[in-house]
Image (cartoon, rainbow, N blue to C red; front, side, top):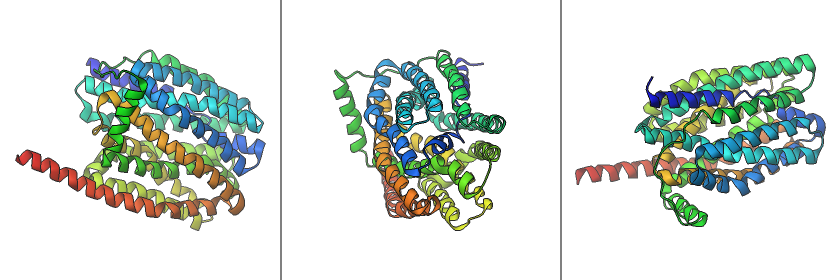
Amino acid sequence: MAAGESRIRRFYLFRAVTSFALWMPFWTLWAYENLDDLFLIAVVDAAFWATMIGLQIPAGLIGDKYGRKVALLLGEGLFALGLLTFGLSTEFWQYVASNIIWAVGVCFIISGDTPFVYDTLVELKRENEFTVVMLTATVVMFATNAAACAVGGFIVEWSDRLDLTLIIAAFIALGGSLAVFMLKEPKVERKREFSYKAHFGVGLKQVITSRAIIILILFQIIIEIGIYVMAFFRSIYMNEDLSLGYLEIGIFFASFLAVAAIMIRLARRIEGVLGEKRSLVFMYGAILISFVVVFMVRHPAAIITQYPIYLVAGIQAPIINAYINRRVDSEHRSTVVAIAAFTFTSLLVVFEIGFGYMASAWGLVESIMAMALMTIPAAVALLLLWSKEVDREREAGAGAVAI
């Protein structure tokens, strides 16, 4: 086996070890069981994202300066600690503190994960394979998540304890810290600015001077907010609105992820057929239709609307991140990823608290429909701007070739 292929396979193994998320269908139900208030659990989760607002960019800078493995090692260790403390929590402020620890870990994971893959491929002179590699890694993650959700459902059914899924998963997640050591730090030359401030300034300049990157970041935020809000409240929706039991919830989550793991293998073909313009339209349309059906169909059959959401959840990051990465230089890749995440978290904190208030006042399903309607003007505007930007870049490229 070629050395390069071995390094990529080790990353897939790392993804598998760190993706056995027993807690995925049950963490919001665990908080809701103790707090019994949609607004309070939204505030608890907002604490997670507020922490990321303050720490995502510093984590990205650390990843650029000290390496991707350092960021991943710190991230996996803190992620495991956050899971454990969340599983041991029963009071509002305990959940808040646990989510803060959890968020710090995720900051470092985000800052190391995607840049690690792209820089490894740059070193191997295979960066054109980034989308394929990340799609495969996403399949591995979803397949492992699917198995974990089914196992988690049986654990809760057997023990009648939602918290066990978090506590057991915390110890499994420690394996993620050990798995980091099998990865090889990519050797990609990165110019060093004199200070973090200067480094951040150059990265920020790359973002604000590129209309394409701004459009992609804002569009990805709309998609990710929709995916995340549904993900956060999905278990409560399934348990309260569709009257599904814990074992059924675990098995359905497993089926969502298994179907997504199969379908996203078609992502490259979909992107190749649709192109840069229509790929984004496809993703937004799938999310919008799913949200509308959740509101209109008050029957357990509405559960099928979660499958296209998981399809988009799987393909959006590899496709959109590939579009962004090809427009950013290597030495600032982590910083640009961090800026995108910072923008997302800043908007999500405000949005999620407002959504939690609406859900408490109007009802969960009604609030989901309201959120879908709110995204339409911004999404349509961004899609139109992106279409014009793709045309402009193609014309510029054709002009350069002609010269």
